[in-house]
Each structure stands twice: as C-alpha cells, then as structure tokens.
Image 1 (tube, rainbow, N blue to C red):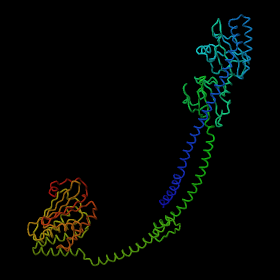
Image 2 (image 1 turned 90 degrees about the vertical axis):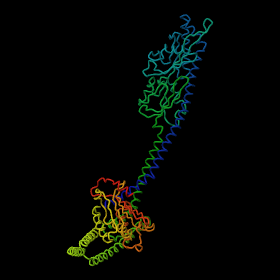
Image 3 (image 1 turned 180 degrees about the vertical axis):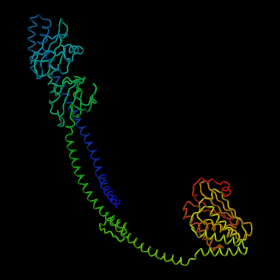
Image 4 (image 1 turned 30 degrees about the vertical axis):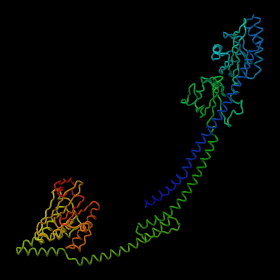
Length: 622
C-alpha cells in the first residue's frame, strides 16, 4: 500500500520538477543573461558619457586657468607695474613708499577685475615679500604648507617662462571659517643697466572656488545622463586639490577609500572602490597643464537605481507567475494522477484476491488504454484460472486412476527375491547373481531418477548393468573404466551414461563375436570441467547418423533397438534441462572405426576442493 502511494507522489513531483526545469530554468537563465548584458551595456554607456564629460571639464579647467594666467601676464606687462617694481627694488625710501602705494592700487584694481582673485604678492628675487595685497584681510603665508615663499621660489627657478600653478591649501586668515586657495606665480623681468634682469616674482592668489566652479557645476553636462556624481581634483601625489567637501582639501584621496585593498599607487587609479561607505565607480582624466587628475566618483546605487527597480519588478512579477503556474501544474497533475490512482486502487483489490474488479475510465487518453488493457488482462487471467482449475482436476483424476493401475514395486522386488532363492537352492549361482543385479538396477532406476549422486555410486550401478549385458551377449565384449580416486565424489545426475553405453553395446558391437572393447574415461579438463568419454571400437556410423544422434533426432525405426534413439534424445534433453549452455555433448564416429561420445559437464562436489588433473587420461582421451 505504501509502495503505490510513494510511486504516485514521485510521479507528481516529477511532473512539477519537469515543468520547473523546462519552463522556469531557461527563463531564469535568460533573465540573468539579459540583466548582466544590460548592466554591462549601461556601464559602458555611462562610462563613455562620463569620459566625454571629463574631457569637457578638463577643457573648461584649462580655459579657466588660462584666463587667470592671462590676467597675471597682463599685470606683469603693465608699464606702471614694471616701473613701480623697479623703484621698489632700487629707489630711495620715498620712491619705495610712493611706488608701494601705486602697486597696492594696481593690485586692488586687478583683484576686483575678476571673481575669484583673492590678492597679489610681490617677492624680490631672494624670496622676500615686498608687497602683499588681500581683498579680505592682511594675508600672511602659511609656513606649514608647500606654498611657502621658499618652496615656491625654488619651483619657479627650476621652470622657464611658463607660470607655476600650486595646489590648493588652507589660507591663514583672521576669519574663523576655513578658507582655501591656490596660487599662480610668474617670474618678473625688467631692464636694468641696459640688459634684461630678473627682478622678482609676482604671485596671484585665487580662491579654491575657481577650481570648484571649473570642474563641477560650470557646465550643463555636469551630470551625465541625469546621474549624480562627485568630482575631485587631485595632484600627482594623490593630494586633494579641490573637493565638494572643503574639509577634504589637502588630504590624500586614497584615505577616502573604505576598502584598504583598493588603495592605489601614484600612477594609477582603481575603476571601482568603496568611498565613504558606498560602492562607487571611478573615472579619471589627466590635466596636462597642471599635472593634476580629474576624478569623477559615481555611486553604483544611484547609477543603477532604475535598473535595480526594474529588476525588483521582474522578480516580483516572476514570483507571482511562478506561484500561479505552480498551482496550475499541481492542479492538473492531480487530475492526471487521479486516473492513475483509480488503476492503482484496482490493483490493490486484485492483490487481495478480487479478480473481478473493473476499471472505468472514459478520459479518452493513454490512461484509458491502460485501463482497457488492465480489464482485458483480468478477463484473460480469470479465463486461464478456470482452465487451470479444470486441468488440475483432470490431472488429479488421472493420477488417481494411474495409482490404481500401478503395480507395487515391492511386489516386483519380493518376486525377484523369491526366484533368486529358488536359484540358490538349485545351485544356479549365475542366475542368482543376475537376478540380484537386475533387482538392484530396477531399484536404482525407479527411485529418484532426477537426483544427483556421487560418480562412484553411478559407476556401481553401471557395473551391474554391464555384467548383465556381458551375459546377454555371451562375453563378446570387454569394458574398461578409467577413473582417479579423487573423482569418486564428483556429483552427476543419474542414468546419464546408460543410453550411450547401451548404444555402443547394441549397435556399435552388432555382429562382433570377439575383440569388442568399451572404454569409459573420467577426468578434469584445463578449464575445470568434468569430461566423460565413452569410446568403442565397433562398426561406427555414417555422417547422417552422427548428425541425427548429435541433435537427438535418431530415427528409432532405423536401429535394431527402438529404445536407443529415444534414450539418446532423452539424455540430450536432460543435459539441456540440468545444465543449460554449460553442458556440451560431442559425438565422433566413422564407418568401421568405432564411435566416441564426449560429455563436458560442470564439475560439482559436496565438499568442493581443488581437483588434480589427470594428464595421462586426458592425453589418451585427446
């Protein structure tokens, strides 16, 4: 009962699993491939847009810096500036005071000419500050930063005529709020004593907002494709020059990375990193003018927000479709297994002996065919059972009649025993011995004829049989049994040899008065099979007779003893019944040269042990 239920459940589960594998698994794989492809396509598209934006930002940064460089250059070409700086270097105290006011006025005018200019500073060629102007406060240089006069002068001296742009730094002012700025510096030349002479350095200080405006919201394309991003400006040492968060200016950019494994060298930037707790995509573009790098940081969450929303929608939709489809397959699989359950119930009733059960199935599908076949099978079984009952009844009646007609074997044994004692009383000892042998042969033959016996016992019976035959044929033949003692316990079915021995005596030695010999050999072959050879030197047979005898179809009408052909055919059938393909019978004969029958049988012992091959007998048999 449990077995049928388990099969039914397994069948339904197989239907559901098959449906999921055939329908949903390819859909999931296709959805995954589509999602990955869409993500990669979007990343490529956004990367191209961001790269284009960075190129435009770089151009805007260069244009902005060039504009302020031009302002500084115009200042240095101003005749009043050249004249006043010369007087401040080589004039009297009064001239220095007057020209200092003139330069102060000029610096103030240039400072107010453009937004973002914080002030100007004039250094002599030794790096001493001669004049400094700041529009907000009296600016002094921050000695803790690399923008100190000494370092700045050192860098300018190592350059040609091009301007020097420094990194942004925290300015030292009277204001409580931190202010950041950077510098553009140039060498100042003038004519003294009729030759061109380096007179000093003019440094223009700019607010950091100049850089911030140049790289952030200065273009309508600052947010490519509508995606929010953050732009940083870093120098060659990964120091932040400009940042939306002003407190980060001057810090190392890689200190913003949360994942320490994503730290990068001075010459490379990662493509992705975790910045301030958010997974981000990094795009960068170098600025050849300053040696700085423009870095665009885009949050992956914001970048793929629409894609993630679409993915969630697909997952919820797919889950609902999967649930609804699963309910449908469970329902329809129930309908299908219901028909099978009907047939299974009928089989259960049949198990309990109800052979008259019928299955009514009108679905018109393959299940109906199975039900119809089951009904037909049960009808056939009922008919066969009725026929079997009748046959068994008739067989019983026949057996009863046969038993009634049988002669009790003990009557035969007792009668032969009485005749035997009568022969002994009249001193007919040969007759007595023959009667005793005949009684033993009769008893051996009719008791358990299909039983396996030791080879020694079969040969004992065969000795009695050959003794009677010798008296029958007036000692016209001699027989020899070749058997090693270790084969005495080999098992053999009873009466397998007698038909072949009888065939040699009756047909092979027909017409021979003397010189007839019969050899019976037993040995084990190399492949561990029992070989039995029955060989005579009689008249032999032609090929047609050998073929008929080999196939158990010897015509008894062509022999002197009708029973011989039947006996040989019976042995062939018994060999096939007992041993199947494991047994083999070979018959070799030639007219006038005798006959040799070889039986190859599986060797069997009650107590199996390794048998020693009889090489001498095997060579004689070969």
